[in-house]
Length: 365
Image 1 (cartoon, helix red, strand yellow):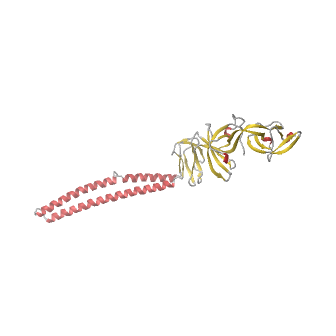
Image 2: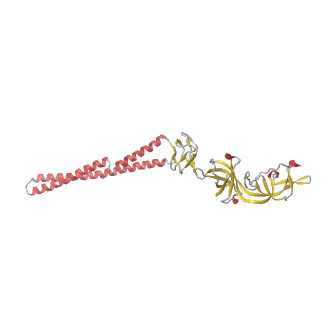
């Protein structure tokens, strides 16, 4: 179990007190037990916008550090011809929709012809009835009456034909609108993943490619996340994961602020072993409001127990195999010990030594 550097402000937490002498008198100290973890710092919520197929990066609309809004287009994949095709189909849908409206020029003109044909059909029908009555009284010839009836029938046929034409034209225009919409939908679906939009109101943290470069399948193009809120993504050895609980304090360092320590709190334990590293991922909410940089590496200690009174020795005196040189008079005897907590420069001794024993380095002979 590894541990981090000292944490200032806590009683002997991670105390760094290397012995400057050749010997050390074993004694008890107050320690804190912690589990070492390493990982990186990330925005509390972040997203990698990726390509759904290998394609050229046509446009990048943002740069790193930009503030963006939800659904704002950040990058476009594909070729100019593909974008033009979408524009053409959108115009075709708009035109087809306009033509299919009741107020369109074609339907309006045909309705006018139908109105005229209806008026003529009604007039010819009345005229045919009148001529038929006049023929009965011998006021006009039967031939004239027959001609009037033929004209009425012709007008009725023309009126019905125009009505049928109107229905046919309406159906044809509606069909063209539906077809245009289907083509646009199919083309738009094929371009899903090629127009990359921000899923949140946030900040652009990284742009991985430049305009004109080839984006590989599932390769990140833009990273966007929530600004001002960060979390740690840590890896904990499988031998230590059983000690981790949500709510535990985490003290961490990052090279960006070398020598400065920050605090976080464990809020998520992902119970899935990562076989490659034989470790588990643990997330911790960062309490500090410093300007952190995503994907910066961190080293951390997750505090397990506080203020443990333990028999300890400086880690410099511990040799491989957990043994020390015990000073007895002028002689040094190699003695095996059982260790416990290893906290900074201190190692807990569970057995093998007692308070008051004097240990020495080999150089102290």
